[in-house]
Image (cartoon, rainbow over all chains, first blue to last red; front, side, top):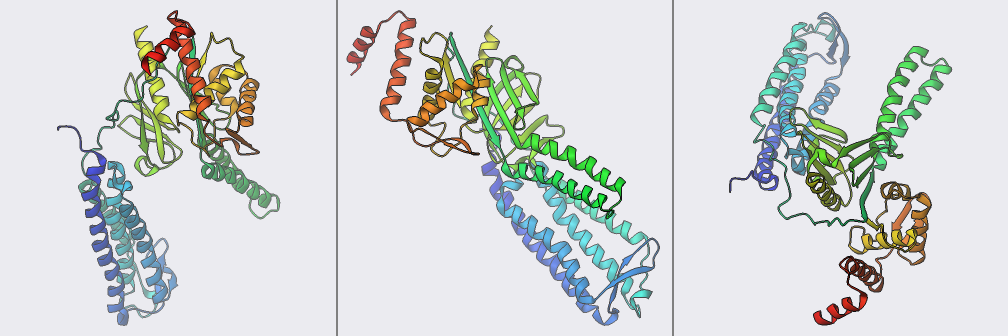
Amino acid sequence: MTSAPSPGRNAAPARGLAVTVAAVWGTSVTAAMVAVPLALRDRLPDPLATHWSGGSVPDDNMSFAADLVVTLALWGVAWIILLAAALHGAALRTRIIRINWWAFLFGWAVFALGVQGSTLYANLDAATWREAELPPWTIFAVLLVAFAVGTLAGYLGRGGPDPATGHPAEPPPAVRLRPGRRTVWVSRVSNPWLTWLAVTAPVAALIVIGLAAGDVVDVPAAWSILSVAVPISLLGVATATVRVTVDPQGLRVGLGPWGWPARRTPAGAIESAWAERRTPGEVGGWGVRSVPGTGRTTLMLRGGDHLVIRRARGGEFAVSADDAERGAALLNAYIAEAAGS
Amino acid sequence: MLLTLDLNDPRPLHEQVAGAIRRAIADGSYAPGDRLPPARDLAGALGINANTVLRALRELRDEGLLEFRRGRGVSVLNRPDAHAVLVEAARELLAEADRYGYGPEEVIHIIRELS
């Protein structure tokens, strides 16, 4: 067989490796973050200088224990999330996510270690935290090294290219079109969580206006928050519900609870259609998701069945739809009809 | 939801729509508990009045197939019984036979031969 390996077969060893590396590497990083400051404790002032503004003079401090907790949290939270994502498995199935995952695992660890290391370096052998001087270049060095390590790790961990999505092995259920009949397919999917999120944004904006009216925040700030919150909210409501229709003209995807605005793709402009299971983890989240360079766009509302079309002039478009198999079958029938006439 | 309307069917439109929805539920694309697309969406796709679809939905509710819940739309309560499904299938078969110029008697004859 020369076909691309299925994601299911591919994911298992990659996932095992990722989990192992994340566990070993993460444990080592955590151990170093605890051991190094403890070993140097006698040479450090308490409290430690923890913040520098502008030049090299410290302007804030924290106790030794608090600083240790904060630095551990900086790394630990990211580590747990990454480990959970690897254990979940689905997250590492696509290349873009794998690259981000590996880049974060190493880049973020280096960043957290760098933050801790530079803090310890500045405080080392200082009598009090006010004398702990940090050369301004250190933060740039930390960022640069973390970014470089992250990029390298992402590159090494990128894995094979994503298997070309295609038609399911078994032929889709055939839909027969007969003259004198009108056959249509309708699906509506909405995600209550996304709607809820989108609706809370203007509520937050209204609270800000209220605060502005009460002179708690200044008016220009309120306007700028409002000018961001309202479009985000509208966009959110529009992409939290989607109405997908297949009729003799082709595919119609209507956004929002009113199905408007809508985008129509004539049957003649579609090469083929099929149903496919996709998850938010695979496409990089909810809403309109596209990976640059692949020409693939997904309107993701929830994990599960998606109706996918390949356009005649290239590019793929997928949209969340219940009962997508029947929709794809009917669309294929109309595509064949459009090609025949 | 896959719906087919026969433009030559002499039955009233709401009966045809009810039949189409009954078929869609019978073929398993919607299971008990699933929410149907709103009547407005179905009407828009079929190119008919939303009231016609609502009338069909009410008929199916009275048959015990659908459940109307305020704020939650229309959902499937039960699968249609075998008799109703077979009636729809037979109606379809008769319409198909008619297109080839076969009458009901000839269809019955074919069924006898098969069984």
